[in-house]
Length: 108
Image 1: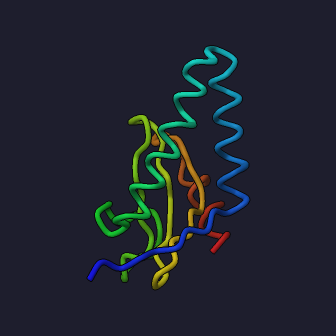
Image 2: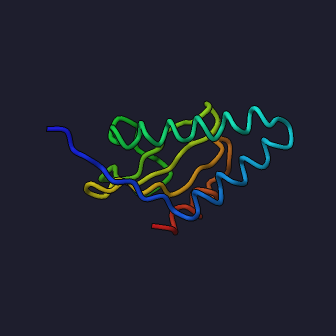
């Protein structure tokens, strides 16, 4: 039997994705819209199979509850699996410092 998951998206994720969108928008409307479309597709993939993506190594994560998925090869969607709930915590550029991960870690 396939387990069904519910998705909760944090305000932090909305804030970060909006900042990324606005940054990309300065250079290209087309690429900014592509970013949003790819983001929506990737969240649907995470919902369908959250354990298919690798555990996050920047968090204390013995139970492998925290995971990430790339979108557009440069951004990591950070999420937590809690039973049948997937909590989308944030999105960061793969080259960002650990301080960005620490901000997300404080959310949940």
